[in-house]
Image 1 (cartoon, rainbow, N blue to C red):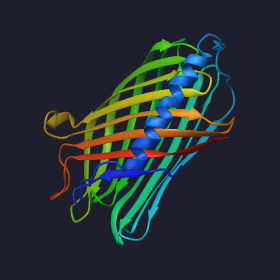
Image 2: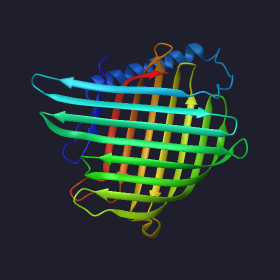
Image 3: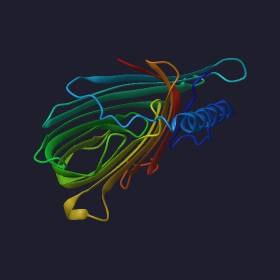
Length: 265
């Protein structure tokens, strides 16, 4: 299987390749078959705690001949849960060329700490870093103290909502830097379909407080991961980043569809 990666940016708009469509269909089909086969015997035991859970994922497309392209993504995520504490860290990047012309270049990183005050209610702190060479974003750093609540907190399913003030440090290429106060509203959902397949979804909305309807950032992600061995899995991830005030000459939306493999440590 050859993973595929497609990003829409201001200079080009393209649909996912046929190979990606076939990979996605195969992955979804595998998930449905696995769900039916394991539904009766699905374990309801709570997830293990007090250990780091780390996943590295990669996607790569390389073509030569009539077309000459390179598209690659890498990501590393880790998390750990204690009785009253939760930590999550992540780093992701991507680079692409079409006939030696750069069309993809981004780096994202985050870190979050939660302190559980009860079984479902928690407070915490989150920091995000974003760079996008195609969108002319030199950097965006967001620091957000937060309060959150698990509306659903079960062995196989979790749904949490978070809210809190934010400070955003932002700079676009050929523009002066900007710092403003914002409000971060977020939700994240995860569900384990079977012992080998999980789906997840998250959304974050960060508006500038004094320009609520004019300047804001909206991010969305949804994905599915199906294990093929104890350590290796196949995954498909869709991401959408909407910037209400992008750099001059850039579109508001950046869409990414990533298909690849992941390895669990």
